[in-house]
Length: 535
Image (cartoon, rainbow, N blue to C red; front, side, top):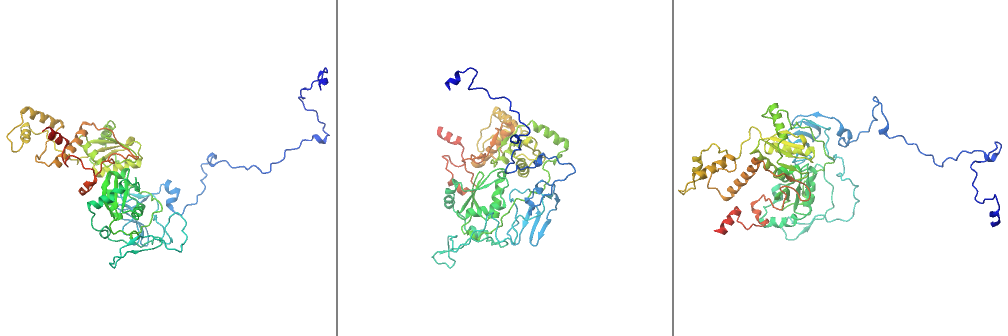
């Protein structure tokens, strides 16, 4: 190889030819053969439906309707409206009927203790105008062998399972009798309702209430009540908690917290329990001394959420007591008005009604900032405030609720600007004493009353509790008149919102021992302790 490399004109690393050699047409070795076919043909998919341009005259392909109208997409997107009248029976199948009444759309089943509804606490107090879907009962048909749970039926077991604890014998013996049964399905159409007084038994004492509440206050086993309020399926959920524990904890969030009294009333009426404690938006419901789980009213479960009916509009062009021109002027003024508070999503609004009433003492218009809330939430909020305050709704523009106090509004505190100074000095004299107020002091008092920074009381001999209540009411009114409200954020989350704090709001005076006692006597002011120290 070394000798070949030294020869002239010989290169071991010569370039390859750039052009292929010519092929003769008669050579069979150089015939062009087509490439072999792939073993599996490549599938050809049609283009997606969105990219296809459908002619205007061509109709959409027919979709097979579902058996249940509420599950149908056409029900949610169609303009189905059927006008209804109050008290009208829309659909009836024997004793099973769908009725429209004062409480909206309700469902009647044979033998039921009351008419069923989807929500018992958040139903508007207005007659509906129409329904959005065909009248169908959202319960399982009576021919269904077992209640719908979304699971396959359990296999039959040959051994008995202990389900209930020891029960008191009815013959009066001291021995305990154990009751063993297998879990059975609901007997549709058969309701065993015991009298509420019989289930509750004698009233609980203060020590018994404290003993029942102590393990439940810090527990996270609770029933969450949201924007729909107390729903029908929540009744069975509360009974499920009562199966193991005597007290059920219910935490409320959102719009239902505006009227907590209504929530407590509905819970007591529908479940048969007793609200023994309430702090902020958390309610503790006692099942009763003589409660037995397998003797409860076994209510059927709703399989889907019925569509809400059509109600009259909340906002009118010319509200009650105003012309269209006056209403438009109020709406223009409301655009420049500062909101008294800002509401957060899933917050606690237990003090909202009181804040609106205090704000109406100083201004005929009040605005609430609801940015971030769903449209359904702040519209339900406005409907509740309209009945509870009461007031007149003007607009929901820019996610803000604008309200007018109305012509029938009456102030809680009288206006004493027309009283003379002589009358004021006569009222300021202490009973049983001969001392009188100086003219300069009377002038200062008159100026304070005229400006709204002082209040003249009709009664002088008030109890400390009554005086403290008057001072708190006047303090809220004074803030509303000065428009110095801070933007209170009633937000959601683990911390809760306004009203759901560490302080506890008792509904019974007998439960004062549950709250840590203060060093000051009940009803006294902090200034009293300071005066006592220096005296």
